[in-house]
Figure 1 (cartoon, helix red, strand yellow):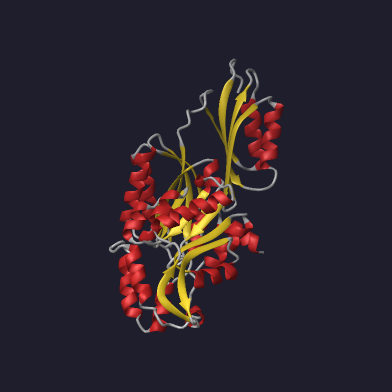
Figure 2: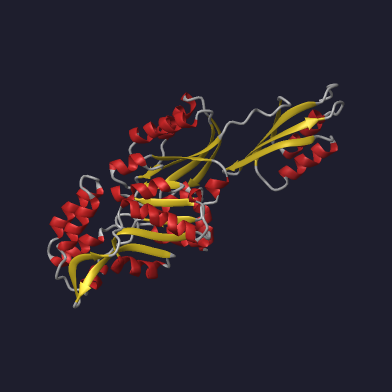
Length: 392
């Protein structure tokens, strides 16, 4: 490359990966007095794909030197002359695609929707192979709202495929607080139904709970009516009910990983302190808030004590917890499933509907439909390999 004018060139290197490829190429570029403008590299199954943008001084025969180096190393090298002015950057968005097995057809639907709105994929990284497949796509889009709508439609039309869209930047990578709902989120059960089973009114309470979580009835009225059915139940029933409580699959991995990353984790529940206090101790949570059942003479009266933890109270508590740790709201994550979680999900920097009711899934920033709580980690950009490495 001995043109009389300075040129900007994209060098593409492909072949079997091994130590020293970058060092060897940079040694050649240094001898040619080339100036490196950009570098991107990925290794897939032992094969390297390396791109380097360089500016070559006039009169230097870089082409011959680099081709000779590639021949000696047994790897492919080719060139493109590119513009000296970088392509103007549009806002970066991180699109996370997740499912039990993201098939080529499902991936095609996602990427076709991205292309159809004029957006472009800069990079794709696999985050996990189990318990679900997940990929992170860095997308450049001039119309963020249009891209979000398109991918929302894809997620709705592809059962089993969950899609999250977040803005790239420090805000996404600096999440510091996760606040979880408890019933049907951190645990698989509804604690009031566990107590109702001890009181002999499980079916009636279950029907009322389902209506409240779907948003069909007003939460406070429904909760107070259900609590009245517990009147006369002995407090020892909590110990018996606790034996039936089931953590959501992946909960232990999820919480352990968050603690290792320095996150604060709290629960805010429409359930009861007799359970959340135990959860706080059992799981090492930073804080726990729930409704308090009134007790007299060792039995529940059927009444509540203090402020009701309803939809607005959950959002208020999220803000208060964040404030207590000096954490901006954009650095918070809320996870829940029911209608009484809506305000909390909307207030958080990232609101995730975890196997949520339809109205909750539609309103949240994103929705998870897989049964594994640790899948939330992939929406935070945490790779499965990093989780496993931390556990060794």
